[in-house]
Image (cartoon, rainbow, N blue to C red; front, side, top):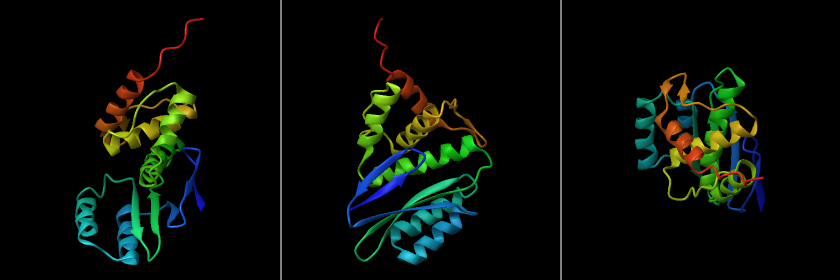
Length: 177
């Protein structure tokens, strides 16, 4: 049994012997890195379909979380572009780390941290995976006292706005003094 260290979220996640975590770090091109991983692990019809989707949105994709199947292990890879500033790099890394956390079936760690550290009581299980990943962004940014917003360099991010509304709706009331 090993641990997956999700640095931006601040979690060490116990993983089984049949899983591996790879933070591939900053890449020059998310689409090309995805293609290289697909070639390394072999493609399946689902991965080929995903490549078509990724190519369509190539200029908008800033990071990715992919699962590759080895002979005995499931390999979870995250990778992302260097967006040129700490705020956006934290945002995209937290987003992809949250997807990895989900792949390991450990969203409970984020739920518990949101509740204990930021007073946000929310169940992540039934939410859209992109909204959950945006909640991971909010968690990481708030943890660093940065002020998250719904505007990105590509314009308005609807999932980030939905996550932000949910975050603030689920914020627990402070106990009266």
